[in-house]
Image (cartoon, rainbow, N blue to C red; front, side, top):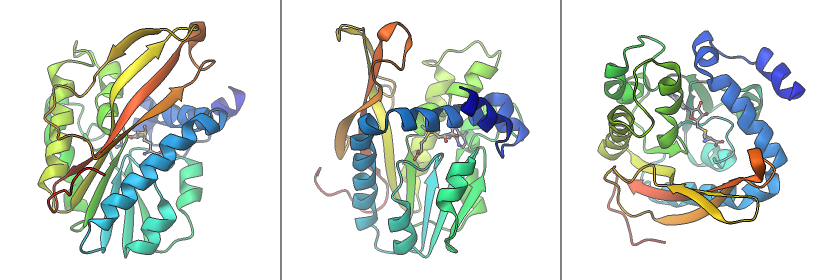
Length: 260
Ligand SMILES: C[S@@+](CC[C@H](N)C(=O)[O-])C[C@H]1O[C@@H](n2cnc3c(N)ncnc32)[C@H](O)[C@@H]1O
């Protein structure tokens, strides 16, 4: 806890990323990954394999953009930097650890950018329309990776707003739909990695709740799907645990081959 508090105090975060809680969230995720390294390892490997499969679909390898790059656990960074002329990592907050991981490669850069544009205006009504603004800032990508970002997009803005909508409301859906439309319409092959189901368990291991956060969105079947024990017993109050079902989806770009 103390390490997290000190990390947050000295974090290289914008006032916006601090105010909405992105910096605190990122530092908490990094701390949980350190505690749950073993349980997270299969998920991280699946993410890396999914990104490699998407890279294999790219006819050209000039620019790859990673949206929601965050702590960079999900991203086979060295492979991307070796395989593409330019790698751009986009997130609202790049922690010190992420900056270190990304450092030392001349073809790799970090862009601090709120994909919803809420740093420029707090008008939630405009947010969905802002989801392709990043394309005007970067060149034409050959590959766009959305790395465990989709379901996160609406969460902190809704927590901070008095909009009165919940996480399953129409604003959240509109934002997630706009992100999918941006990925699907290109240019570039779109690689979406996102959880599609969440399952909670009590201390005895009995399932107590489940939800499917992206069921209302029009998504193709995932190319591959796996479980992520994001919160093993000990991480949540009352001895509960949480498992996410995560999928890798191919959007836009050349037609997808059969599921792997
Ligand atoms: C679950 S984390 C992704 C983990 C990351 N892909 C990795 O490899 O470790 C979600 C990320 O999305 C970012 N994010 C959420 N909303 C965003 C927004 N509006 N604009 C830019 N980044 C955002 C968060 O800051 C966070 O780093």
